[in-house]
Length: 211
Image (cartoon, rainbow, N blue to C red; front, side):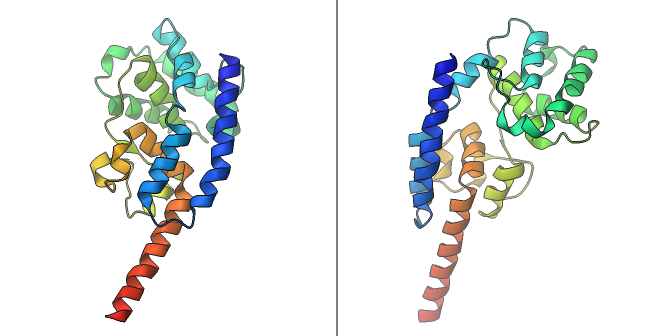
């Protein structure tokens, strides 16, 4: 398991270098294809780890601890690692059972209600913990694309804002991705998306000027 996670990391680092070469591309579809080549299997190994817990309580502990099987902290939670035990304690003390959550958004809202009480924990941790629990452990996928931090910046470049947005609101090129991959794509490729929107705006202006 450990070696596989390292391999995935190395592949993603290589892809990060290659994707920068696409900044000059004005084709959103090319960005999506580049993402799929690099990241289409990016969740498979880590999701095996999040799904491995035998009970709801153990799943909560693993999701909140935000550490892989090799002990490495998930990058999104590195700067808030000292806050995570408080979130875990509140969620365990609540004695809430997974049967309460009929869809992803209900779980997301519950995790968010906990994080609101903990200074320093925001929507990124809310989404990550919820995805590990319901999206992986309970195998119930999100119905919306959740926008926070980098994914919100990427979506804003496309003129899309909000906390939870239907996939159908995005350009058709992006709709070939799942909602989970769309969130990841928007975060990883936010600079490339910004470059494309700028280039398209310049192109449109040039067309208008020539008419």
